[in-house]
Length: 177
Image (cartoon, rainbow, N blue to C red; front, top):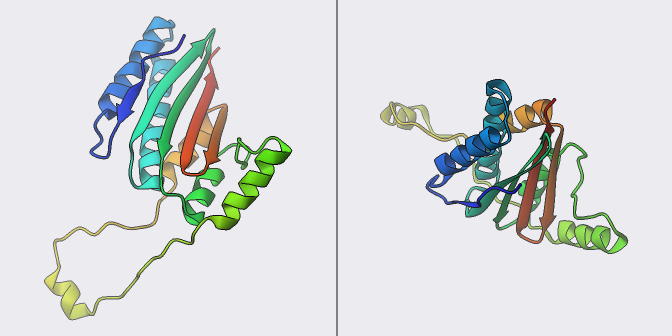
């Protein structure tokens, strides 16, 4: 069984619809409350992780269920750089790009890896006088804390990411007893 495809955008539009689609799929397949919550957690963490790593999101989300196995999918396009690529690959169970299975796949992956640009970061330290003037303002930390990655790797059976150019396909799998 394949669920409806939910479109996710930059303003987090579609996040609620994706979680709702996950609930419907869990109910249709007869999951109990605890396992249904696990499935919802996977959906939320996947969406959050893709948004955190890629920065922008125009993605498609759907679920596939067969017997007690559930596969959550998200597909998006992004401007790929070496840092994003490394973070995405580090988020997988196998620590590999799933698209690089054949000789030509590995060759293409190596070429794309070599061609990936380095991300530019500008960091500067503000003087104490300026920081005092900025009190009460919230500044985003550019570093990703990897919380989503740790949750998915700990609770899911398998996390796969396939990167081809700027196309990223993520699949999280879980089989419930």
